[in-house]
Image (cartoon, rainbow, N blue to C red; front, side, top):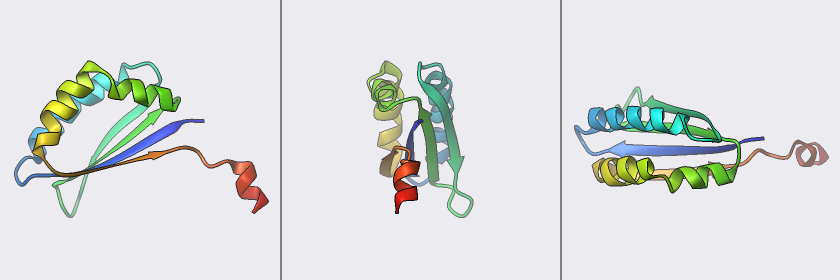
Length: 103
C-alpha cells in the first residue's frame, strides 16, 4: 500500500519557469527522504501555468515528515507558494479491494 498526494498549482503569469526550477530542487531533496517512493512534476500542455505534482509515500506519516522538513518550508512554503495564483492539494489512500468487491 502507498499514500499518494496530488497537488495542482497555477502559477502567477510569467512565474512558471521559476516554479519549475524550484521544484527540480524539491524533487531531488524529496526523493532522498525515507518513505518517498516518487515525486513527479508535470506541466500543463494547454496552459503552461498549470503544474501538477504526483507524490507517493510508503505511509501518511512519511508525507507528514516531508511537510515538516526544512526543505519543504524553505522551498515550497517560502519560495513557491508566493509565486502561485492557486494551490490545491489532494491526499489519497488506496481503495480497499475487498470493500470494492463486496459492492
